[in-house]
Length: 171
Image (tube, rainbow, N blue to C red; front, side):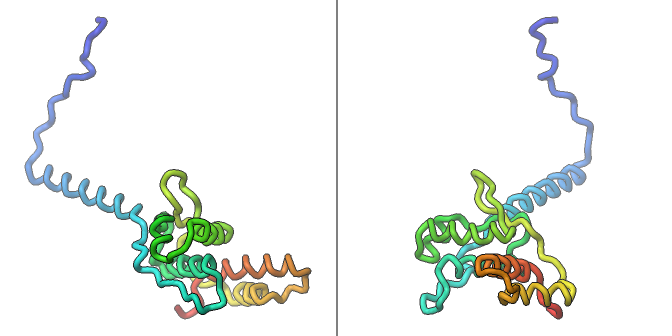
């Protein structure tokens, strides 16, 4: 039977009570709201402003602010970072500075790019590190490796990033 549109016909709905239907509608609305809130980025006004008198560069300060938001749980895995333009306006810096800060967090494995959507937090907060691992990372972050300068700097940067991802004991 060519040209038949039987697949477009609606099936009759089974009789449901109004209360059950209302519960289902409310449950679906709640799930929808949770899904929307999950991908709503952090309000950039909740981040501190730059300290121009500190010895740290602007991109390092921005990365520190975002890292602190991740470590504190203000930003959880799957949350979106504020947009480049929102951070540019908040901090009064160029897009390049914001992107450099994001790059620092990407190198530490804290955020990833979601093309067409923005930057997303990749790692959830974890429990404290074992004491011996924390001691080793603190030594590496302090530059105590005995390796040539480049490798010492790289290890110190990576160790500092790992330490930032884990809360200190007793917190």
